Length: 362
Length: 249
Ligand SMILES: Cc1ncc(C[n+]2csc(CCOP(=O)(O)OP(=O)(O)O)c2C)c(N)n1
Ligand code: SF4
Ligand SMILES: [Mg+2]
Image 1 (cartoon, rainbow over the protein chains, first blue to last red):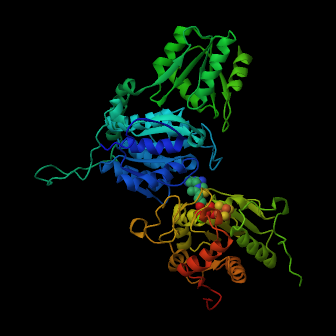
Image 2: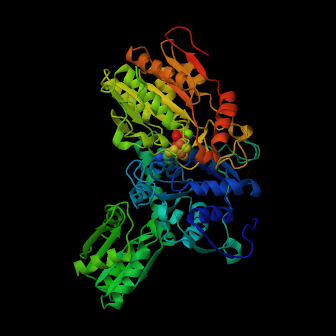
Image 3: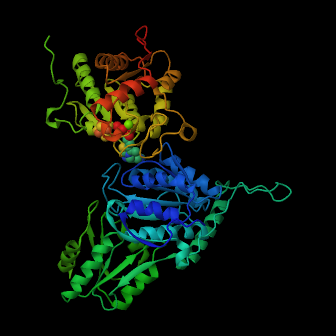
């Protein structure tokens, strides 16, 4: 694979630029997309770089088309990806559903903006439900919620690998703040870190002579009978459950003796990290738990953190009204820990918001 | 009769408007405002704007108005018109909203000869999102997603909207292309497009060639040159279909 970064290097850039570079470093072949703020610059950087590296790009007529062209690209054996946000993410649920149903390893970068509908172009964490369980299916997806530009870079590289290794669609869930803000990160070629990139392979257009070298490839996406579908979905669910422990990621700090555990994800977890340290300095035993994968969710790990700390409370804080909270509740059903919430839909949450909230509930 | 500087149907608390200096949107909306005044339909008009720079017009008129969703103004207007035929529905959208994401709605509402009026602003790019390629971007034109110039081999030729819609609609439709550089003609076409709806004839569509100095990165002279020398040469201005007699080319 071509080395695009060379010597690993410190950079200072926006999250969107980091995302475009990460796709290039990961060996992505082609991007299909449609303009929408706050992800536009991923496309802008990609269109500038693509011809120089022999990569493809198409701006489609809308997000439905972008999503389905990505499905096609992946079926043909290329590392195809897209990026979108808000109402574009809504439209892409139809193609993402096809990707779930047909186990297509596409990668989509979602830079959340305010909703519903056009909402704002700025920021939110309101696309959690959509990105994890959108579509008329069972949420057979892998969703990484990043919190820094370094993670955008790292998880895009990792995401292409999980997609092609396990054949589930992968989502890099960022937000408008991560998209537009500039911060330092280290960029690298995966090989230079000993990361082996999975090979892409075609599902159709397999070469050889049909009837002689191989049979035709017939990819199925609709079933005649309830039982047929039942069998397929049950099998996919079992595979998903079996792979989940290999995929699940989380971060946890100060949970050994915590009285209250802050559960946050994405960029809000940066504020939670600061808040927990500040609270500890004031003698308040706060802990920190962050699911990095929202699908599959680190269920056992969160239950274990609650158990070992003996925490009496969880504080779930998010820039949405209960989208993370619903995920957490379904995953830890049966735990008796009391759940407190801080919901700030469409606006950022800073350290002091969390500190004040913790003090008000302890 | 004294010429009124500001149309009566404009909503003054929202002025000055928020379009960039040199933007053509304001000229189109001025013509629309004057036509609404002349036809005395301020109280019947439902103004629907798309998401694009057209969204800035959501409170532009002292008319009942609704902001819709990127590309979806056409079906929202059709829904209103089908439910309340006495209302005069005016959809206002960009070339991205109309010809790209909303193209299926444009095509199907034209085929059904829906009795709505659509005004589509062609500024050869996606203005609101920072200047990406639009279906109308000219061959060779540089945009954020055609940084080396639009290559028709890769992305086709500009969409010829009115020509395409004229093919889809019956004779009772009104289809025209105007430009902000010919104000009187622009106003006349918008008026015909509204009259055609009010008379219950059929689908009424006006594309307007317009300016976007911000994303074109042009000064006043270059802006005007691009409109008159490049755009008007590529996109012929005139009436393509008119139930009121012979078209004016
Ligand atoms: C479903 C969806 N996709 C993308 C967007 C982002 N978006 C907002 S405005 C716009 C383009 C507007 O361009 P155009 O319609 O040509 O209008 P202009 O701003 O040029 O007047 C886009 C892509 C959106 N709001 N919704
Ligand atoms: S970006 Fe272009 S279309 Fe939008 S208001 Fe400014 S000049 Fe007008
Ligand atoms: Mg436009």
